[in-house]
Image (tube, rainbow, N blue to C red; front, side, top):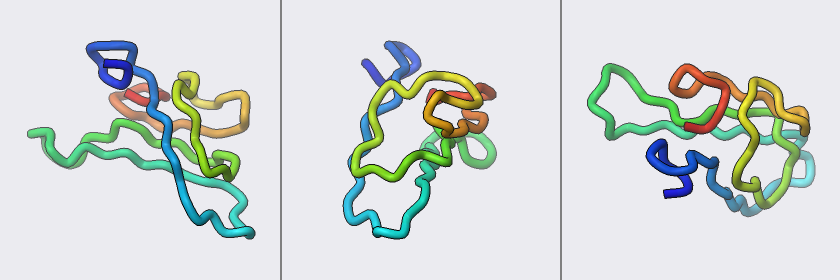
Length: 81
C-alpha cells in the first residue's frame, strides 16, 4: 500500500537501464489507461531528473523539488498520486 492513494501514496522506485552517455536529463510520464474516465488519467509527470539508473522512491511533493526536477499536475497536484 506504499504506492496507493489508500496508503502512503509514495512514488515508486524506478530502475532504468542503458542510459546513454549524452543524456542530460530524464522524464517520467505515468498514465493509467484502465480508469473509466474520458481521456487518460496521469498518476505522475516529472521531468528534468538527473540521469541515473535508479529514480528513488518517495520523491517529495511540489512543483519543483530540491534536485531541480519539475513535477506537473497529476490528480490536480504537483506530485505522484
